[in-house]
Image (cartoon, rainbow, N blue to C red; front, side, top):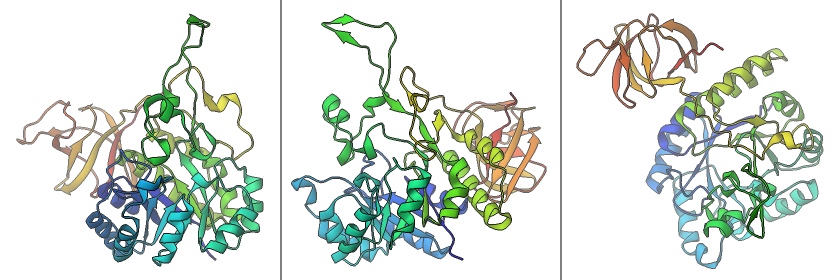
Length: 392
């Protein structure tokens, strides 16, 4: 039985390794050129080679985004870059331009079509298949019934977004950032203008006192995953190349466990996975279009929803003699209830002892990025995470 791929984002080599450790089958990254996430820590060619070497060691894949909508000047150096990606052994490139797609195919690279191309039907897939495209990332505006129909009639692979940021414009094709800031969202410069606060004015007169925004809630597809597995889509995609290590580990890890449990048992406790994934969210979420047309409840018209969580308190670097060597991320204290979360562990303990870099006992850890020792009464592993348990 062919299993659906879990595809994770990575904005750095560290995040790529975390995504793979926590269960991703494949990872998508951005290079320094032709990528839409210009502000993320994109990969030089030497980093891409390191990424593919690491991933292939564990039987995983690496896809590189070349998903800008290029102007003439943006195409300079394309063939050379594609040749470098081929030498770096990338498994596929993700493109939004037919020109880049043709050049990638000519270079012998497996080529996937970006969601930016707004593919919503199987006839479009037939056209892209005729060009040599091997996978299509469907538009995010399709519901489950439509996805099933498209997938049934597709002769090439189909990929669907299940989690992460959503664009208020159709398939991400927005010009608001261009207009407001002269930063082209379709060439890697999105200023997220839809998330700003605005006031409505007519003839310079305020028409309302409250500010409003135009952004959408983030996508959370937990409730739709088992249905997508039944449909048989080839890949489930998580958005978030600019997200934190904590976000990557938590979201990827829980989708991995959800998928594996469903394949093994035929049923899952979706409420549990929903609760766990929300520990890493800092924006309000919705099911997007997956369960049907969106309503005004799935948009953020009059508020910004960013509320960074501070329950991620430490990243474990090693475990020696009953102590975890950790990098602090948020404040924690003696007596706090904490949980260790990792690919193979989810256990709770009480923080009883904290040692600073000098080996001195301290009551409170206050300095992010400081290296500390925390006594933990059970074995943990490198890259497990420690979260504060917050009771509500």
